[in-house]
Length: 612
Picture (cartoon, rainbow, N blue to C red):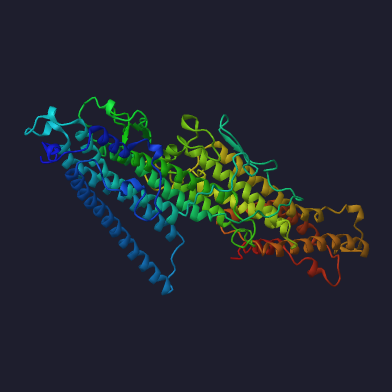
């Protein structure tokens, strides 16, 4: 009551024009509120640090006290969250020091925990601001007090009361801004540099929103035998796993800002009494600032002055900052997949098994897929490297997932071509089997099962936070991934087809006998069968030996490959062996030529692709 009733008459304040000029400092356009303090210092804008100077000393002192209390509430809450997270980190470090194996998902969990803490800080800020509003509502609103005549209170004092409330709220929002941006810079590792993925070059990918399709380069039905590729520059390329965790955590924070931001902005606003103070404000005052959070709009401008309060401007900056950094996190993820290094055992396994980039990309898709609305908040305001449209013209989350998958396929093809540069004999087989392993893995992990007995998996709805059962139902996925798989399979089986050239029949008129009853062939006729059996044995041994260096971990793919390989030559070989093994075409080495009976071949196939 001291503040609002006749508090304006406690001392002689400056002239009204001077007071309104001072208050202008705490109002302005959102675009003018930028970071002036060091990240992690506890402050975002210098204005929120400065003491309130309204011209009414008792009002300044009271608001300063409330501001300090609010800041300490926010600061202590943040410290408690960090202390709890440090305890968990120390426990994990202790487990590692004792030799316990922790999965690679721990880094993702830590980053997600940091993102959740940032959202909790935003929620706690709303609690603090709501408490301050309950105090200031009775102070600022003239209708809540009956001990004074509202008409006698100067307009500049009413605006000073609004500025005092905004000053308190601004300190809380300012602290949240620093907490969230600190997460983006420190935890998510997002810097100010754009990822090395050009807007006009998709690394062999082209996009067309009108057809809602992304296309691979030509010759996607496998690899051309003569193709080669040079390894790309791996400098400054983030790891896909880390980039995926950062993107998902950033989308989580944006989801929180998108949903809580409008409410926080409204809490930060208390309209002054309806008065005509336009003439008291400088003619060059800032224009009205407004913002949209998520799908809905929240205009936090003061209608009576055409300006917004400092607290409201900071709320707008919070949303803009989150959208900007979230866009960078998504671009980092896209660049990490596209520019994944082509060399190295982890990036291009020597045994042609599934590459780490494939499993990391599948995990990335599952991590980001639930945040549909948060992604839309980004594309509504910022163009992205794979989608330069904004607003309603921009694509949905599926378009981003499509870009990730198509970038992955292009990267896998480049890796496969690197095998062809190796001097080892099975280099081509490695290239084809590498594509078979990776494309089959993608179909199994993200494609829908055609097995009628398989469990039905549904995509998560937008507000759920886990996408472990996410499946891609669109035709583009099946067409592109299956085309690569089948093309690589055809080229791989061609190497086995070479065995059939030794299994041609020998015309009867070319078979001469020294003993027709016992089917003992002459030397010349025997050489015809010797050449066929010997050619098959040598080529088969060579092919089988090369397969020992290759790995197929998925049992379904292994069964499929063995079935396809057998279908290529085994029926012909069984027929050839059963017919000509009854002939005596070698006196000393008959058993050596017949060392691969069909049953033995079948048993040898059971152990193929099991080098792991």
